[in-house]
Length: 68
Image (cartoon, rainbow, N blue to C red; front, side):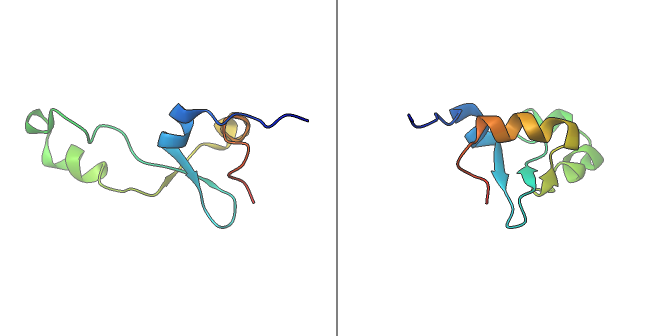
């Protein structure tokens, strides 16, 4: 049986926790920060957001070797 390929775009965006949840970083924190309010910038500061349950199955297909 051949090895499965990991989707590199998904690898950069998602990772797994020790319990198997899919972790992601929040959006809107990369550029154009001068135009954003302090509240917008603070809300995006949290690094440990979790992927939605509806998307989790698709992400796990893209990252076949990350699960425990």
